[in-house]
Image 1: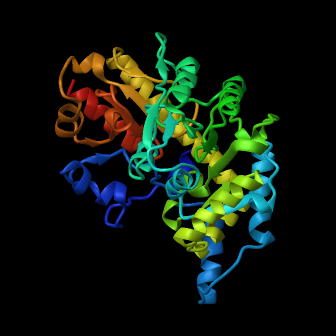
Image 2 (image 1 turned 90 degrees about the horizontal axis):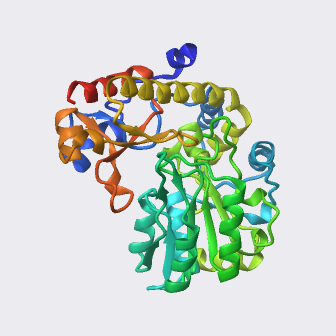
Image 3 (image 1 turned 120 degrees about the horizontal axis):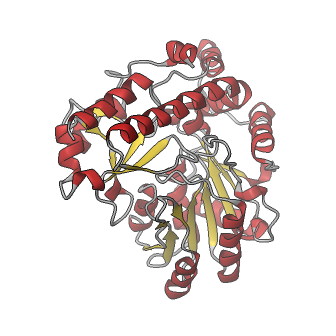
Length: 390
């Protein structure tokens, strides 16, 4: 782990990083330690830079297409890691998963129709629904007495019926609560959505960040009749390999009718094509990046345990939810805030920039999300800032 940190950890200040240099527009302050935006403070795997450098040295960036040099490493990764067998005909591309969410909402629903999500959840889910004039419906996750989040299946189905929901956006693994859904949970969601003919969008961008004993179950890997009828999955190498700025994601649509609807919408709004450097980086990541990823996962798990140990030792009232997946730690500070404003404590007193719980859904004031994909020294500094201001 130390070798990985020494080689790849890097200071990103002054590089037009949203996380480090873009604090003022969001937080109204600049001198904060950033633990918010979900990208990493590590250089990419060597093979990615080598592939990009090779193209740069060629010196031409004209219109390009993708061939087996792209598809083979991506398909191999999906099959070996998630038991998903893909077909080229299923694949479409977008400049990112969030852009894909807007495409899905526009393609498969009409204005004022209902789209369901499970809050607290990644806030662009809500934006994609509300910004397009659709009706946002949430079947909120249940927080159990042992500080674990579960799906409220009864509320999920009841709200689908009540609001005549057309589309469901699933976050798997779940951001921010860190859940990795079990097969029986996914099957029950499939059964409900098949019963009511709700199209499922599975955002699986965090699929590679799953920790033992948990296992990521890709929705398309399941043997369920609705997979070929009403399921679309979307992912990207951007989260796994820290290449979000290269704007390239993959949409997987097994059903021909859904593909046709999707293509018709994209044709209406104009297909901008595939990002050349993004596609090169993606193929190289899947082909050469596995060892880099394995070392990175060790760092994230170390950081997770570092936070847990220090806060448990000095502030055991703070609730830290289990990190089954993602590199994003969800924390409930309400037991130590005791009515104090969370922003005033975390930002103004502790000097930290975090994602606040209310960004993810109503009722989560006093919760925060920490980005663990950075060096342990930064995590230790952040935790100490919290402890110093208790």
